Length: 104
Image 1 (cartoon, rainbow, N blue to C red):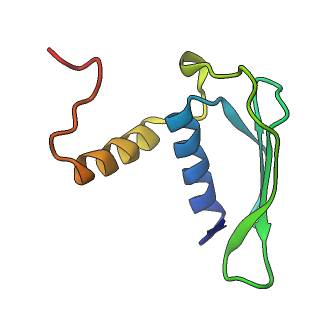
Image 2: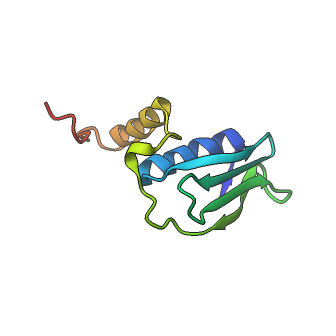
């Protein structure tokens, strides 16, 4: 998978974290690389860095599965901007989309 830059990769990591209830955290980050791990200490690791063969950055390492580490209340990686971006995409795809729990 390729991304335009590290900022775009961070945004999609946040969306993945939010959509799947994973508590992912950034271990290392600079202009050329990004390492994401699961905060719940499972074996998940994702390394994204520059690639000479494509424009932008791409996933170089993707290890592990999440094992019993879903905690929707402890997801600190997700910000209000991430939630707004996620809901905006859902609403654009389906204008009748209802947000669960907001049925008053």
